[in-house]
Length: 508
Image (tube, rainbow, N blue to C red; front, side, top):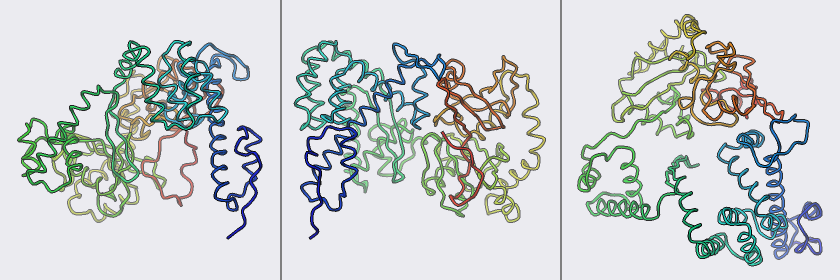
């Protein structure tokens, strides 16, 4: 058994800051005794809380600076402007949702909850508990906020976040039921449905901000349907059936069916409605079983190759486009497909498919088209041959205020999504934006346009962010605080990590 190392005396009571950071930096944890390691852990957690408090102070300080002033000056404002959070999102590579939330939290903490800030800064509470104080006390009058903080903060360290939240909620509701109702109504106004992809290739779909009674009713109905389907002999666990029923009720698969019809659908796979088609991007090599590279649901993320093949081939009736790319994955030729593979079916309603392939793969397929894909390959080859003339045609009307459908499609495929700082909104949900504004003489061409969502269009036109396009498809943003960020649409086909060159433009 190795001898225990020395832990600085007084570490357990040392206030977070430079001295504690230096003490922890000098500890060799591999030689610290079991008991002392717990004290090291607690000390480092106190330091983490202190750093979180100081980061919040920095964020709040940024929110209090004047974006209209010279970036070299120190100029303050009474409260954050509309576009200050965008400076934060590009500086720290955050999403717009996170940057808005962190600015709101930090400003609240510093301006309205000084006791909570001090408790976080001193390591008395951690960041999750500080957020709970902010959630429940934000809208209370100043004297009531201070009264609750003084009474509750001393009790907080041994409590879990769940206990703290329940305690504060009781205090808020009990002391001011009208304000609690107001808090509920504000949250109810923000109700939404959220979906995201999980690390294991599955996805999560949930609704938040809904009325508790509606949630209970929905869960009860889904559970009752699942139990009835299980009793009818469907060979799956009730939890699995609940998930299938939940999605089927939403995506159109169970549209128009009553309770008996839903049970019959699962028991007998009786005909029902078609599930909704989706926007999906897929490498042709994946669809031809030449690769297991994932597909993509724009705005959501990558999905497994098997899911990609199944979904693409279910959307024969949707819109299909193609993108032929160079060896670095960037666009060479786009186009709209007039043909479909013979394997495709009409199992989904609508949707859109983007086929991606390299020029080298296209050359190989042109020599030996895969069965069922002959007409698709011939269609792509023909459009590539005509591309020089097509490219001239889409830029032939520079004095037109709005882009033609062909120019808009080219911009959507090239840019992949909104080119705003850190934005992930898909290109199809964004708009063609003139880099040099049309009313300032900017032409409506692919060299003076790119995809921006409504927020980032306003960021440019109203938020004092400057946008330039030094090269076609490459963009440069300059913030009111003098920071410069370069952007380019992601490669359509992500090259292997070992591929040299190509993407020398740093992301946001």
